[in-house]
Amino acid sequence: MRETERARARAVIDLAALRANVRALRSKAPGAAFMAVVKADGYGHGAIPCARAAVEAGATWVGTATPEEALALSRKAGLPDHVRIMCWLWTPGGPWREAIEAGIDVSVSALWALEEVTEAAKAVQKTARVHLKADTGLGRGGSQPADWADLVRHARDAERAGAVRVVGLWSHLACADEPGHPSTQAQLDRFREMTAYAQAQGVRPEVRHIANSPATLTLPEAHYDLVRPGIAMYGLSPSPDLGASADLGLRPAMTLTAPVALVKHVPGGHGVSYGHHYVTPGETTLALVPLGYGDGVPRHASGAGPVLIGGKWRTAAGRIAMDQFVVDLGGDEVEAGAEAVLFGPGDRGEPTAEDWAQAAGTIGYEIVTRVSARVPRVYVGG
Image (cartoon, rainbow, N blue to C red; front, side, top):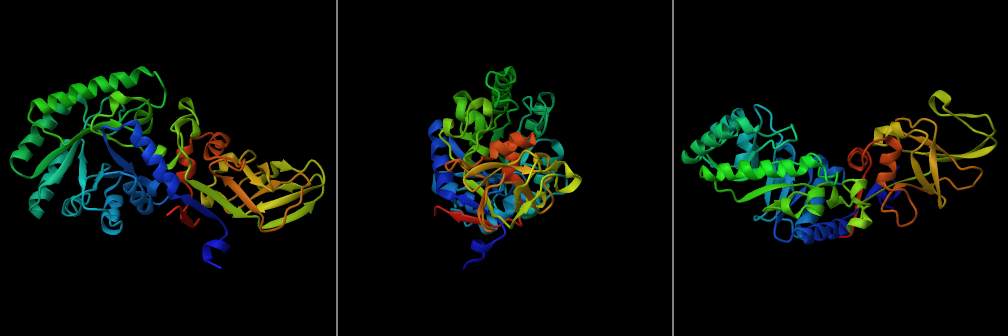
């Protein structure tokens, strides 16, 4: 018996579903290149296997947040030479030299970053591939419009000196997951203005990009030269406002399961878990599920988190602890070792990550991303 077959819990990742999601998303933006965003260890699914699967389905770019994530991909993933890797979340003193030597595309939002990448490029005697990021209204990373001309001017100076090549102009949308939100059109207008200015100053980007998952699905005018789907690639809807996964032609790739660790009979009035926030209403059967917030199961879903056991939908009884939680079976009988399905695609009537998100008052992104490293990933579908 393999270790994963007798594991305390496991997250099964369906790479065939991921590849199908990539193909479905590419069909929404047929004129744009596709960046597979695999930050945060592929939203909890595993960055390296998911990057490889996405490339098999036609992705020609891979995106990460941190340079450390990008460097790990560059060293370990064995991606084809034509696939570009980009990262964008830099802090002063970051590993610019290593990224440049590895051929990784880097993002620049401010003069300090341009200065650091320029110095690093000179030190390693290589030209850095740079994407200038514009803050078109999200208010996070990116250059403010008032500072854009100065950043473009210094970037052009660095280009003429041979230190950098501005290969991309990009931004990120704030409310594309809310159909009709006025900020989206305002951001697209600002992006068009800021990219036009940079190009008028002599910048010749290979790609302009602003489309995230919801924009890839619903805003063709945002596709430009490259789209950057994240959560949708893993089969989750970016927002209930856009529809469920199936409505969007997507299939969730992760299924989280555990074997029931203990089944026991208890009398009515029996407190369950810390704080006794749940007390059995009568004689019943309790099942112990060996997963908790140490594994990424959100404590905020205590008393509400759904799980499929014995063919029926149950909810966590009382507090979710670090390593385990309890389910009241209502007198039903199952054996220790019976499968408890916390979430999956929903094919067997099991809850989905979105169901857990609603129970915890959060979003599906967080549910899959927070599944911790002590839950082994098992890959199926090639």
